[in-house]
Amino acid sequence: MTKKYEVGDVVTGKVTGIQPYGAFVALDENTQGLVHISEITYGFVKDVADFLKIGDEVQVKILEVDENSEKISLSTRALQDVPPQKRKEQFPRKSLQDRVDESDANGFKSLRDKLQDWIEQSGH
Image (cartoon, rainbow, N blue to C red; front, side, top):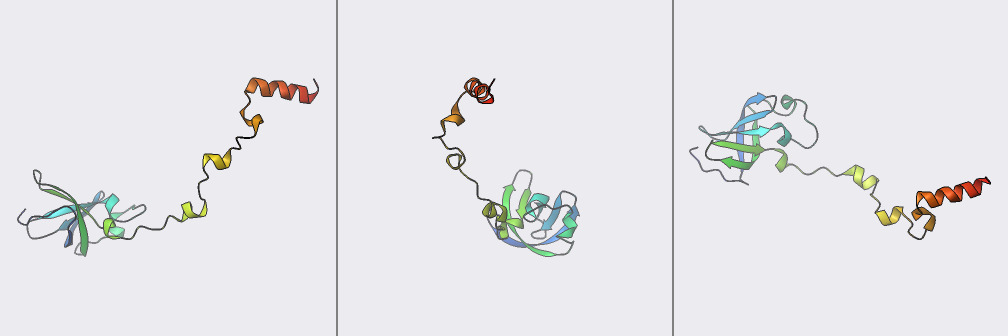
C-alpha cells in the first residue's frame, strides 16, 4: 500500500473486477479493496453485476484495513441512507403488558385447576 488508508475514510475508486462474492475496487495504482456483496446496498443482492460494472467510478467507505495481508474492506452501502423500516412502523410491536391482562386470574390458573373448572362447566 503506497498511500495510508484509514478506517472511516471515504474515497473514490474504480471497479476492476466482479466476483460472485463482491467487487474489487482500485483505490490508487497500487491499492485495491473489496466491496463484499453484503456491503453493496441494503436489501438482498443476488448478482453483484446488477449494481456495479467494471470501470464504474464509485465512492466507498473504508471499513477495515489489514496491513499484514494488505486487504482493505470497503462499503458502498455505508454511504447510502438507511431505508425506512416500513414493516415495523405498520405493525408496532406490543409489549407483554399490552398482550396479557394480569388481572385476569383465569389466565394464570394451572392447567389442573382449569381442567377441573372445564369439567364442572360441562356438567359432568
